[in-house]
Image (tube, rainbow, N blue to C red; front, side):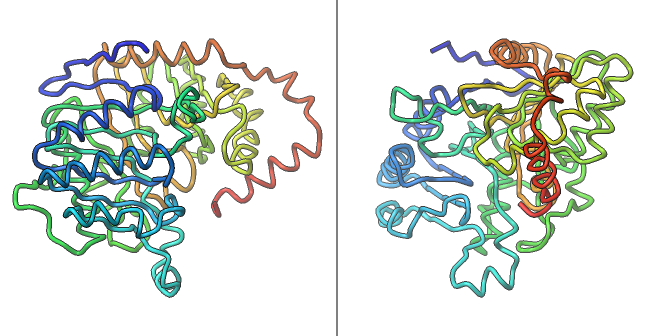
Length: 385
């Protein structure tokens, strides 16, 4: 296991955590060292070896008097029952389900089935925070630990930025539980004030569509992607598990390639959701002929949502460049404007590309017509996933 490297960025420090093999020990260690508060907002928690490890750590923290609060998504964590958290609650932990599906009338009247909390967030003592694409499930455990070893990224952050992550958690907490946040939670500033900042898709009302308010537009993940792509001068490197960008994002990438920017996109060779994988592949020919290099990662499922632009900017989080992340999900990315960190992240992107297969247009065009039909059928359903 390579050593985790922390990069100073203004008053903050950030570190790239590749895969569950590196992320889980850091996250569990932070919970075990907690003195005051542990906040967990997670799309997917499984009642398996991985989920139980985190449950034990959270319960131990609650037993020693730490305030423990958990929000999990009803669809993402479909295997979870109330009994799973019983001991944590017994010791004072508080747990809420985001957009519960039962009773059924809740889902029908609030649109809960469509509006999901896709964030992966852990904040400890307001001092350290973690976010990225990794969920608490055995798919992210190393193979040697009985997992599937999915390829994914998390970012750890220490310093004032942890308070912004804490604020974001308590916004979800208020919407879900109805309880007011602690008095020391500050509102998220309209503009970023540092070189490490939070990007988020946040609904304007608790159970309504995910629309960006005037306050949150400056924090929009999609807006930041578009602005950075339009300003890129040298390189755009994107690793994204469900890469089905809409016309505006594709147009920005094509314009970047036309002005000489090297644009590379890394996607899974075999994704975890077949219909989404077909939709991803439906765009390959259009992207490659538009000057974009496409690489597919074999062997392991790629689940990362990471981008590096001009070796000066990097973003890591839960946001997929697809319709659902844009219009339906609550998402969270951390953005970092720092040359050393961006270069470090791109070095690992290069490492992944070295073991990936580049899509060559002549070979790609030889695929069967039934496969092409499946691709365009899946792409046609992209707004319904």
